[in-house]
Amino acid sequence: MNSRELALVSTATVFGALASAFAVRYFYFSNGNSRRQFSKLNSVPNGGVSKKCSSRSPFDPSKRKEYLSWDDYFMAIAFLSAERSKDPNRQVGACLVSQNGIILGIGYNGFPRGCSDDKLPWAKKSESGDPLETKYPYVCHAEVNAILNTNHASVAGQRLYVTMFPCNECAKIIIQSGVSEVIYFIEKSLNNSDTAYIASHKLLSMTGQKTSTPDGPNFDQVQRALDNDFIALHLPSLIAIYSGMVEPDYQFITCMLHLHEPTNGTSHLTIKDYTIYHKGFLDDSFYCCI
Image (cartoon, rainbow, N blue to C red):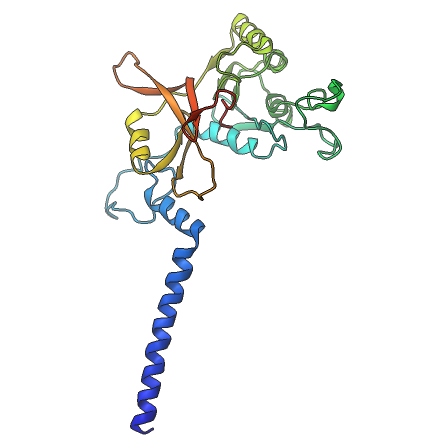
């Protein structure tokens, strides 16, 4: 190979390497989803997603501290179950757990088994006023499905995690089945003025069923996420912090939760009172994150 051919080969090699580098850079940085996922993996605090790079020493014998509590774990399963719901307006999930921490049944709101999701209506209202043209006569609620999906395990004395406070019909079944505790994530509405839910609270209170919401996270954790250009949907039981790198036309929602002062003097968030802002404008009608 003469010197001219050697020079041509060397030049081609250099240009090939440069082209490969530019191609890799282009595909990596032009893929918005990849950038968001990369940002999420490296930036999500508190163990929401495993960090790609860890500063933990391989010789450190201590356990990981950012793991989910049992309440968070079971409520997260309830939320995951809700993702199976075909309801376009509201997705609710439930998880029935034994006193020993064993999952007995899960469920979400939907039509009964064997009933087509495409042949029954999902509408909330009927233009003709016919209730049979709405979803309400047909839907089985998440709590009922979780209880019925236990495969004959005893429900008495067990705990039910549900993403939304049960309605009065579900409360009756919860009471009759013997469930001892209901851990719910959120009320149906801000003022909880719905007759069915007032009745539900009354029934569960009269029969001694314990109802509660998981403890809220420390406000500083959420504030740090917001300061780092994240959209924080860091609600008390399910930590879901999403990257702030959104598409230009994506109308995101941020939850502005009121601060409460517990007896220990530290600030925590609560789900009992909160306001949701949509693009900076108050939207009272959109009160549910699930």
